[in-house]
Amino acid sequence: MLKVILSRVIQTIVVVFFLITFVFFAVRAIPGNPFAGEKALAPEEQAALERQYGLDKPVPVQYYNYLKNIFTKGDFGDSSAMKGRQVSTLIAESFPVSLKLGIVSLILGMGIGIPLGIIAALFHNKWQDYTAMVIAMAGICIVAFVLGPIFQLSIARPLSFLNVAGWSRTSDIILPAITLCFGVAAYLARLTRGGMLDVLSQDYIRTARAKGVPTLQIITKHALRPALQPAITYLGPAFAAIITGSFVVENIFLVPGMGQHFVLGITSKDYNLVLGLVLFYGILMGIANLLSDLALIFMDPKLRNS
Image (cartoon, rainbow, N blue to C red):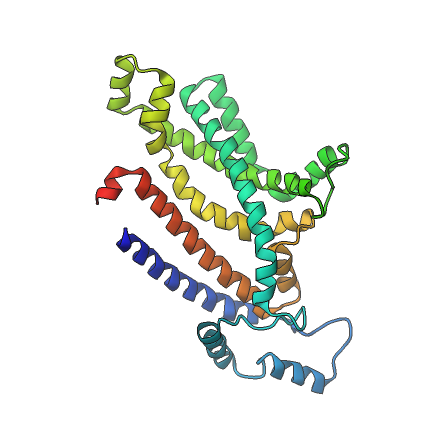
């Protein structure tokens, strides 16, 4: 167990280092000026802002200073788009909202996708299987920025207790969570179906059926745990992607999560904001992968013994 944790932590550190290095130089290669706005700045004002954010130095020196501030101070720098605000503060304020939305979306996705995959496997090559896979394929093909406006027009507008957009009531989480969960549910349904079909074809399942063990007991006691291993592997990065990659849905429904800052950082060329969010995403992805690996070890006795 300790070896798995240590290995995953080292992998995460290496991946995050290369990720932040690539993004650091990539964002600076984008044409444009992070301080360009509607009002043109005088040369001396431009120079003062560049000194304030450390952009007057050569790019390699900027890179060294950025890494030094992260490792020595835990400082992601100040946002140039939201002057006077630190990137770490913006992430700390918006992350709980994205986390709440992500957890609800993941629970809904699991509640829809896993049963759908089990039903498809039990009725293999029958109408139930075809129907479940059509639904799953639709969930994969229809992207969130299409589903969001459809739900706003067809669900939110006729129902008075749902807002078309906003984050002022408890019910405001319903539509964004449903929009986000469709893709997760679709992939979980396909992975669960494939894993269940593979397990149901094993000899020990045939033996259990020959002994007259009820189908429900075969599924819950013998087949479900090994069949869910591909889905568990997917859940780790899927959870991190839902939390940090839901900026399209968050902007459609005006959810005050991290997505708004990511869009602002890209459109305004806010280097520190983009880098801070990418770094946070990389760390979160590493933690999610570690948790999924530990869940697999817990579910599979062979992995525990090895």
